Image (cartoon, rainbow, N blue to C red):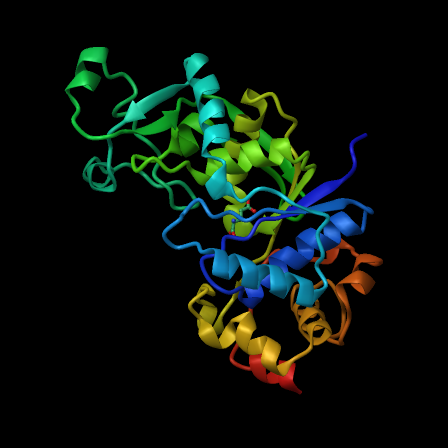
Length: 309
Ligand code: GLU
C-alpha cells in the first residue's frame, strides 16, 4: 500500500478567500487524519493571472492556518517539457488531434454545454485530412479523442457518479492554441508523478473527475480517490471570487486568529456541531467526512461579523 498522499493545489491568481481555505482545510484534514503526506503544488499555468507574489502569500496563509505540507512540487509554469512529453505519448497512441475551433465557432455551431459549463465538443476538427490541416494558418489547440465509454467512480461526499465521455464530455483540450497546457493534462501528470492517492477539492471540479480518471489510466497511472467538498458562497448565493477583497485572507488575518476561522468554516460545512476555535491539527484527530454537507454553504452577510465576535 502506498502512503496516503493528498495535495493542496492553489492557483495563485489572488489571495485566498474562505472558500479556498475551506477546500484546502478539507484536503489537509483528509490526508493528515490518515497520517498521510501533503504536497503543495502551485498551479500557475495561467502565467498572466498567476504571480509568484500571490504564490508566496498563499504559502504564508497556509502556514498561518496550520496547514503545513511535506514537500512542495515544482510549480506548473516550469513543467512544460514534462507535459509535452506526455502529450507526445498520447499522440503516438493516435489519441490527439489538432483543433482550430474557437469559442466563437463552437458557439455558432451551437455546441451543447456539459454540466460544468464546458463545451461538449461536436467533433468539428476530429476528422480533418492532412491536406485540410495544412491549409490552416493559425496555431491549433490539441484535443484528446475520447471513446464512447462510461467512466464511473465513487466520490467521498457525492457518492456514485458516472459520465459517458463521448456524449457528456466530448474530446477535450490538452494544450491550448496559445501554447499553454490545459489544466486537465497538467493536473493528471502531476498527480501521477506526486504519487497522489486522494484528491480533495471544491465541488466545482466534480465534473472534471471522469476526464482525469480516463487520462490517468491512459498515462499508466492509478486514479486517486476523489472527494469533492461543498462550495462556500457569498451573500445572496454568489460565487466567491479572489476579487472579494473584504473576504480575502490578507484582511481577515488582521482581525481574527486561525483557530476562529477554522472552527467557523468547519461548523458551516457541517463537520463540527458548534462553532468554536479549533486548530487544524485538533480537527484532524476527529475528521469525519460523512458529516460534510452536500449542499453549497452560503456565508451570508454576517460571516465577517461573526468571526469578530
Ligand atoms: N488549482 C485549482 C484551483 O485552485 C485546483 C485544482 C485541483 O484541485 O484539481 O481551483
